[in-house]
Length: 323
Image (tube, rainbow, N blue to C red):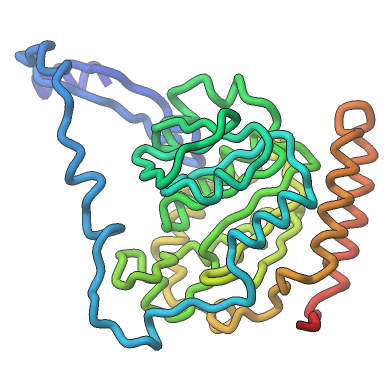
């Protein structure tokens, strides 16, 4: 790296090896040798970063068949009930925005968002790290100092490779009893699933996380939930010692970008998803809540509970729930 810098008349500011395999890119940051260090103290203009059309603008004249969501219960109502059933001691989320989901947690809670736009004050037990999720997990000591995550909610960048990376990082702070939720898995129209935002209702290609995890991590228990407006994926069976995704990340990201193009009809139709009021959800959350009490003293008990949950979930789809 230093030799390349010298040949180009540059100086190496920093370098590191990407933890994502199988290529483990060597990443470097350079500056011109005549760079004035005083310039580094200037506050950068982040307007372009946080006010670009990818996330914050869209056509205003789209027909209703494009601009709509679906589902049988508002996502935050489902989240609130899930929190009551699971009774987490530590709640973690990526993508705070206005703080609506973070404020639902009665326990200690931490949200990650570089530019939150809170509409109301947070409680004393709620905190925000004003960083990107990548920076939080790689440049801060937050992951090493926070307790085990009981419930996580991922609602950050609506691009599948970011969601996959967020899940991988979050899982390292989870336990066998933990639950991870991923928002925006169900676009209601193909235009909503475009990687470049073209509608107000925008899921991006987050839906790809379902087939990716089903193929690469069959040990996980996936429960897609029919929440409004864009669905919620419940993930159970997290294992912080499992590294199956890390050496395959580059290949999976390439597959996401270059091979998974059109939204599968099963995604648009929300095929084989769970009704958010399905009693199996409360039963599963109760089992995990009970398992958490023995997570440290008896790890084998947690594995037994997960096997029971897997059998219960796999044998219950599809189900109809009376209104």
